[in-house]
Image (cartoon, rainbow, N blue to C red; front, side):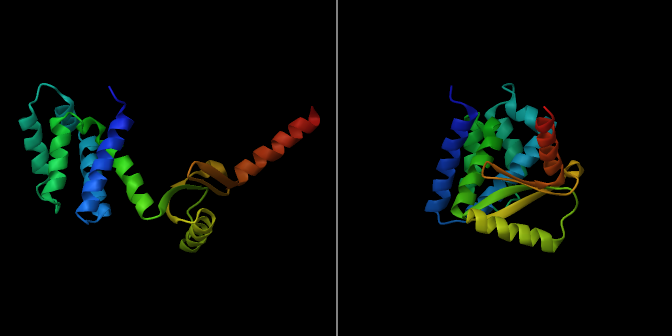
Length: 184
């Protein structure tokens, strides 16, 4: 059996092609899938229902269709979710959402940057950091901010598999390492 990541890539590719052919906004489809995924992940009962072989496809679809009926989404996307349930691929919805998000970000020439800061960044500091990162990576940066007091001061940024560490904690570790090697 294929890994969840391989399955997710196939389904997200098919969905992305469907969205492109229909000339629809992939960001809206992503938002729909992300919201559905969050709802499923946050409900133990719903999660159990969808993963359980005891419940029929009809029972599972009945519950999920009630969840999405008020969403302003095209029938083809609710049908996509229906296929996921029918083929027991709803279990990899989280991975599909992540793969789809990657495709949307690539289309938008954007990337998420995970920013850790010792303190809350001011809007000006965040804008300056974002601008610098956009110049460095030549892409639109979508920052995800997290406060990490252990940094003491400064920031640590993870983007596209690279870590840029401008924290005081990192500088202190580097100094300590040099002192330890000098003493040896």
